[in-house]
Image (cartoon, rainbow, N blue to C red; front, side, top):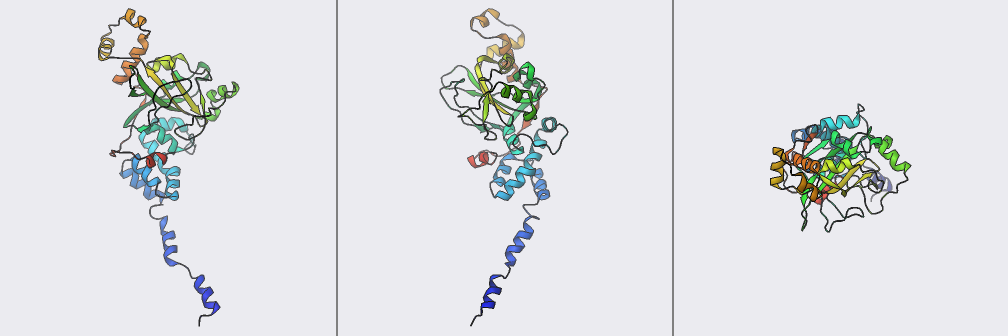
Length: 312
């Protein structure tokens, strides 16, 4: 016959296997130093980091706290150094995972009230991007040019039934809470968009077109028409936008390289020579030489939605 005391002792008998698992977990996969060495040996493959972030909440927490930051510093050392501005513990935007997504992921495009297109383009990982703070100045009004904005060269997409290519770009403003750009948006009492969210952190956004804070230099820099672009800035300082790029044939590119411009034809078509020169320069990789090329560095061939969600 089993006594009540024996039952109580059995109920409180420790589960040694459970205790052993818990005690050794931190010295294994959840040990930050081990994980740092593992991913360093894998050259900071963002796809693998996405996958391991999906395994458990604990691994996801470690990735958000340590691994995404190290990946960003490895891939974009100059950009990260400028964003933290000598404060190694500074939180960038909504976190390093959001910055990592911005570095490697073109967010695609959906129609909006100021940018109407007849199709939606899905987002995708990109193998190589170039971000430049010099280019970023072209996207800031004069009163806001003390802000530091890193902007990417546009990711070009062919539009169905349209002679213009679609350019999709993204960027981040350093210390957005204290920036002149945010101060202008607040002063003008611009309302946050109802239907659009930041593709990098999920937060609400302002339309810079609605706020009338899009300088003409942005269109020139992109090689676009001023009335055919729009971009948004979220409450964490992430920027994303789209534009229609001026048509540029191979003949145009050759002519621009040779310095032979047909001004009359360009004026008749409403295409500015500067815009065509910018577009040609972007294609040849000349204009953003002061920026930083950011290589994905992954051998993965496919990207699953779960990997994208791990960065959100």
